[in-house]
Length: 107
Image (cartoon, rainbow, N blue to C red; front, side, top):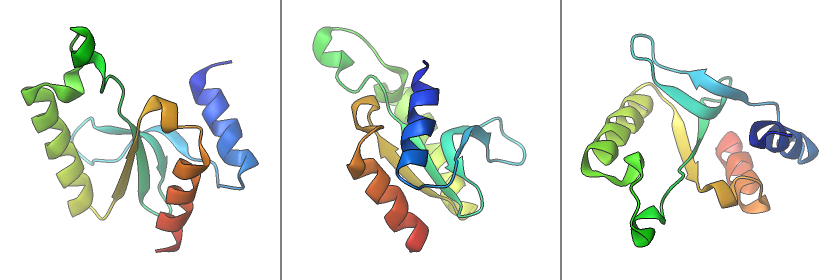
């Protein structure tokens, strides 16, 4: 079973509405959110590779240009009214992440 299928099943088991995986949120750019609840304008981005540098490897998200591109994406999302939550792959299927999504949906 894929990580995506596991995450969707986990969210459903926690009584969250089904998110849209790989949701294209911007009208002109190709930007996508890993998971989105468009009705509430809540997005969840899974930030992989945060520990790679300590192992001598690179992750696009944590290079100067990658971080700058992510900032541009997240700022554009905020300007469009989106609330973007971020987690690591290890945090994706946890109650901490589910609670953050639920809290954002109620805000």
